[in-house]
Image (cartoon, rainbow, N blue to C red; front, side, top):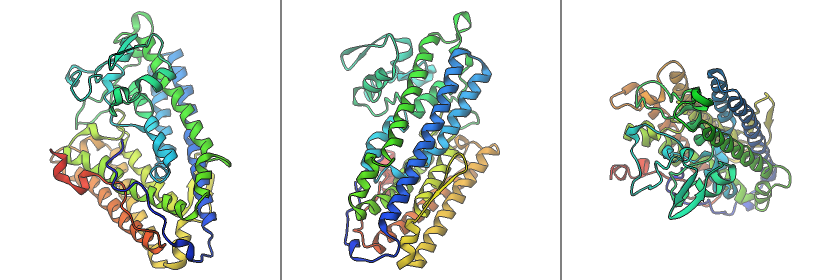
Amino acid sequence: MKSKLLCATLLVGCAGTAAYAVEKAEVINTYANIAQAAYGDSAATAHRLQRAVETLIAAPSAENLQAAKAAWRAARVPYQQTEAFRFGNPIVDEWEGKVNGWPLDEGLIDYVDAAYGGASDENPLAALNVVAQPKLSIAGREADASKITPALIETTLHEADGIEANVASGYHAIEFMLWGQDLNGTGPGAGMRPWTDYASGAACSNGNCDRRAQYLKAATDLLVSDLDWMAAQWAEGGAARANLMQNENAAVSAMLTGMGSLSYGELAGERMRLGLMLNDPEEEQDCFSDNTHNSHFYDGKGIQNVYLGQYVRMNGEQVSGPSLSDLVAETTPALDQEMQAKLTTTVDALGRIKIAAESGLAYDQMLARGNAAGEALIMGGVDALIDQTKTIERIVTSLELDQAGFEGSDSLDNPNAVFQ
């Protein structure tokens, strides 16, 4: 979900007048190589998820559902490390909502608990239940959903009627199809969708198991094709890489924009502080699976990767080269050391959230009103992210790029507006 944009881009200043031993072109090339590797890993893990989903559909069982869930969790690890490439690169930002849109009104897709409610003025399609409806009416237009395909999801259902909450594709739609709703509030436990939701004949639970399988497969196939496409954009000759190479100063600005916007408005604000203010697990990034602690941690790692110019691939191979860190260290070594230290502090703070969640204190529980320990863990991450953003801003100045704001969030910039 996109938070309020305070400034769309960093404007290019006069950095071209400075001489650097580390060539900006080399730094940019490292950045593009890391993007290519991380999106490549994202695509590869999505292909493994696709195979697990196909196995589940062909032979529904508790074991095969668990295997598909494990494949989904594994697929999140490299993808979250790509999010630092989002805000400074329009080709990524314009595409991102297809694969990581959230939060979603899941009643659009499949059955939900009665407490979920129904259609509203904000979203007339909030409880459409495509899985149960072979014929749809969307904004007064009829749509044939007799077969649920990637094309139907992409062109008709995703953000249907122009409503952002109608997320029909991507990781979180698949997450819902695997876990179902998490009805535990701020108590422990994730979604509990039974494997029999994909069974055939009399064993089918909650009806429409064949169409549910169609939806899960179509959404997974679409995720795979979307990630394959984005990986290709960062390869030699790809559009994302080519765009960066057109203007070195703009490319360095894009790198810093991605770091600062993810650090501040998106992660510290929309994904962490907002949920804590509202004590609302519906504001979790991975709310059906209780995987939010991992998503936050790997977002933090992705920011660090960009600055240090290094990324460890899923096969253990390290992709590295001349970096922003090298560029800053040439002219302002103390600022580079400060940035590195703050990045470490942030990753450590997000790591503490991850450790606590894996030790039994779910992120849901951390959000509960009155949970002082949970609030301290989350705010430790928020404060570290805000603090590192201040240093990113100083780096913009040190490299003689025009200063500009990053992505913002009412939860940080105008807290009173959150409750209006």
